[in-house]
Amino acid sequence: MKRVVITGVGAVSACGIGAGALTDAALGGISGVRPVTFPAIQPQRVGTAAALSDETLAEVAENAGGNRMRDPVADYALMAAREAAAQAGISRDDGGDRCGVMIGSGFGGGKTLDDNYLSFGRDRNMRLDPMSVPKIMNNAAASWVSIEFGATGPVYCTATACSSASQSIGLAFQLLRSGAIDRCFAGGAEACLVNGVFRVWELLRVMTATMNRPFSRDRNGMTLGEGAGILVMETLESAKARGADILCELVGYGTNSDAGDLLRPNPERAAACMNIALSDAGLTPSDVGYVNAHGTGTVANDVTEATALRTVFGEELTGLSVSSTKPIHGHALGAAGALELITTIGALRAQIAPPTINFNEIDPKIGFDPVSNTACPVETRAMMSNSLAFGGINASLIVARV
Figure 1 (cartoon, one colour):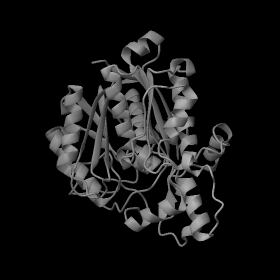
Figure 2 (cartoon, one colour):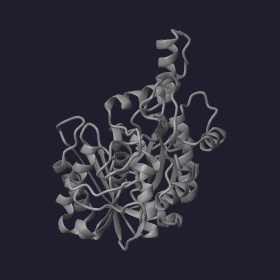
Figure 3 (cartoon, helix red, strand yellow):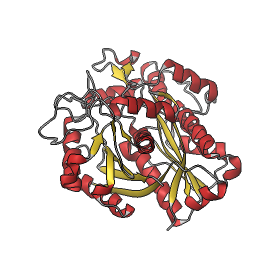
């Protein structure tokens, strides 16, 4: 099997344009959460989200907008892919049949869909956007990145809720390791902060109306986010042949399903997923020095993940750095796993564990103290990133220093 490395990363998030903006915010504990207003769903119960700033939206519009066949979700993916490609030194000449694209999305073209619902359902307008279908389809972001870089190899869109990006990265990892392709754009994109999507999340009663506080005793829900995270992944041979700078190596991937409740997570299956990733990487729990937890800040998720972490790491959990960066960039759903893996790569390279901001008090049901409010130094070769999705779909990724 071939070794797989990461040579470029790109991000669009509430923290700004660029992977550097995301990583700096995560390590510095600077939140991108801001007030949001959705005119069609007044009154709102929840008034904040990790939405892209006006400055970020303007930059996206200037550099990737203007195509009437694209929803913002594809614009975000293109912006992130261009950054990742520039860092990796990839151009259209590196596309072709040996280059794939794997980009997950939970909602696809959310803005286009929402605009159509309001126009037709509320205003009874029959003249809808004729380009709605290619804008709404989940695979649009992946297809546009494929077109941009001439990637004529396999193109996939994984739509597995909050695990979409992580499973896309994992699928790319498996194809690269098998030798089926030489390089791949992989990650996730989401543009879901629109009237209808926000309202249905409000109705689920899982979003906080105050602050997102993962693992804290007083946590009361998650904060939605959006954006895109794209990685350039390639075989070690490909990277060396191009003389590319290597950011890290992807060494392990685990995925499984709960086959149980659609919304309530299962700690045994989450633990099994982490163990699959460790086995795949040929590592023991003691080899991992930091875990970027799924850590949504809901009561059920955080207890489930904490139980799973205790099962996997046992006594090692006491000295393990664990945090959730979702209070920084929000829960970006189909893009979450990519944004969090990019953050984890930044943490690995800096040898710093990012904090769980807004943390107040240890929850006895959690049973451990996460890295709280301030980043801390770590010395480790390997770090893990977890995604635990609605539908009972779990994914764990492990990156290591080369």
